Image (cartoon, rainbow, N blue to C red; front, side):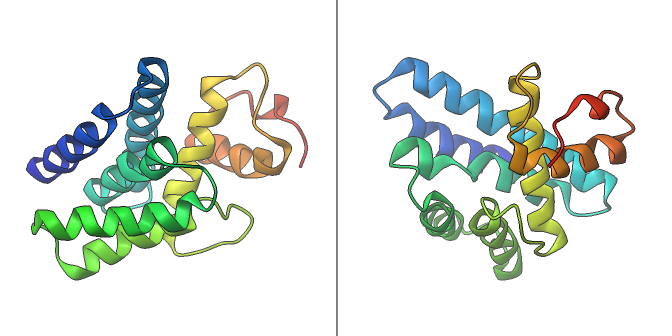
Length: 161
């Protein structure tokens, strides 16, 4: 848990520099929600929940503090720098987190299981943040699969992809 708090503190410090309080709150809610969903999905899939949480809390940090264009690529670089500066992660752990962040926007392709956790958590949060509008059509198949995996009802109301 100490590593989670160290990364959260770094992320919160970076987000504190945002001028817009509404956007800052939106960032905190989304990043925290994706982190929690990542933890849950990683646990269910027998993957490292701590690393999944950390990938979730960092995955859109660049998008909120800089720009959305190519935010997954730039965000993975930002995450790499933060994780290396903390000096509390093994190289393979940094690689797993950074890879998941780099791949999280490419939801059409299947990557490693750890990246898939982050993608699924991101889609789940987008849907649950606005359940009546549903996920985007491009994400509905992924969202339906997560609903089924978790044994949730309501996936039949999601749009067809």
